[in-house]
Image (cartoon, rainbow, N blue to C red; front, side, top):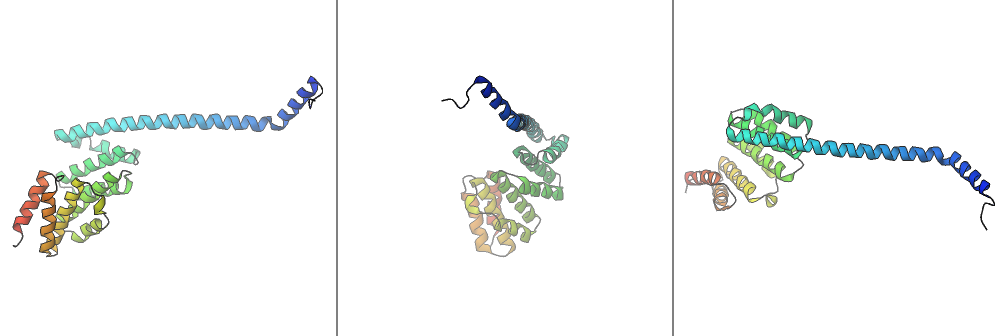
Amino acid sequence: MSRFETEEEQIDAIKAWWKKNGTALLTAILIFVVVFSAWRYWNNYNQVQATNASSIYEVMQLNMQQGTFGEVSRDALKLMQEQPKSPYASAAALLLAKYNFSKGALDEAQENLEWVNEHATEPTMKRTAMMRLARLFADQQKFEQALTIMNAVNATQLMPTEKGHFDYISGVIAIAKNETSAAQDAFKNVIDNAGASQTLKGLAQIQLDDLPK
C-alpha cells in the first residue's frame, strides 16, 4: 500500500520536503557550479601561462645562441617573478646565470643559481644549479662553500654529464687541499666519463698533467 493515500498528499509531502531542504540543496548546487567554474578557469589560466612561458623561453634560447641575451634578460627576471614554480622559470634563471657569468657579474650569477636551487621543482634542474654554483665557488677559490654544496649532493643520483662536473670540482677542491691522489682520481674519472663534454675533459686533462707525478 502506498505511503500516501492520494496525489494531493504526495504533493503536500513534496512541498514540505522542499520547504525543509530546498535552500540547502540550492546552496549545494550553487557551490558546485562555482567550484567547477573556478576549476575550469584556473586550469585554462595555467595552460595559457605555461604556453606563454614556453614561448618566452624559446625566444631566450634563440637570443642566447645569437649572443643577444641581454635584450631579453628582463623577460627572464619577469618569468622568475611571475611564475616561480614553472620549469621554464628555472630554465630561464639558468640562462640568466650563464649570461651574468659570461659578463663577469659573478654575484648576480650566484643569485640566479641559488634561486633555481630554491624554487626548481625538477630534480635535474636543481642538481644542475648546485653543480654550477659549486663550480662558481671553486673557480673563485671559495673551496669551503663549494665543498658544502658538494656534500649536499648525492653523487649516485647524478646523470653522466652532471657526474663529470661533480668529479671535476672534486678534483679542483682536492688540489686546494693538497690531496694529489684524490685529485688524480677525480680528473681521471672526468676523462673516462663518456657523458662529459670534450671541453670539460680537456680541462681535466690539463689539470691532471699539471699535478706532480
